[in-house]
Length: 296
Image 1 (cartoon, rainbow, N blue to C red):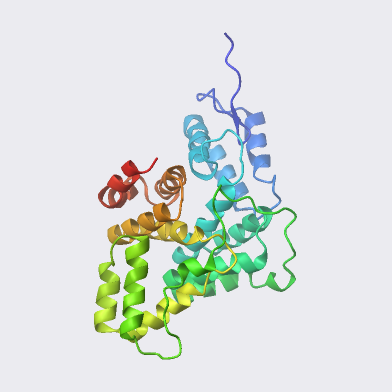
Image 2: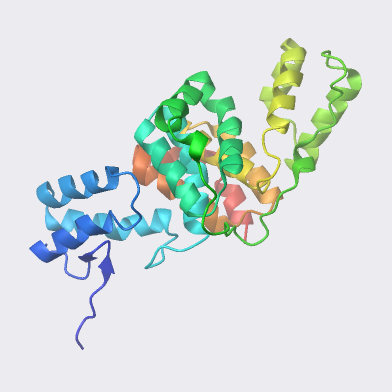
């Protein structure tokens, strides 16, 4: 039986021991298919010119298990939600080329500017004002002329907007954390996670007014996007930072709000592949192994 070619990013990955000039050229051209920022072209050029053929092709095989969900071809909704969590990642580490690329990718996958900016405003809670500065330097020159996307976004099944899901019932007529505010906030965590995180307990004890104000800001960040983008972004950033308690909190919220296990696996693989190596599995192993085992 003749083995059929397995073409990934212009490369025949069924033949690991050779890299032809035709494959190199096709690999470079594959980086231009979306007419976006050219960083992928630079990456393809430096690897295909200087890495050994086996590494180049194994990289092309492995990348599909991250940003395309393991499919042979890029597909929706995998790429949409990949960019949803990657934009905050690049804000956090300050990679402005990546920020610009993800704005383009989100537009290409159907997200209008107002929804992309909802992602930015939620991610600001993690990336700070520095993160907003990186966004401005990356894309501020074209935001004023940002056009509508050509296609509608395709979200995973069950992902839908629900702005009231974030509301804990804080009384915004007063800056004080009232007894009712505390009951409502703790009740939100009990309903959605099954417990009140120590971070919230500590904040309420030592600086309740700040907890109320900052939580209210976070509750207002996502209004038109599916509510599931919030735990998905939390998952990515806490996995990047190896925050055990944050990972557990995000995963429980993801489970509560109907995010499928396969998308969590895909996200964690992306952290390993692009950000931190296999050591990035340490925190998930400690924090969420039992939760993933309990999910279908």
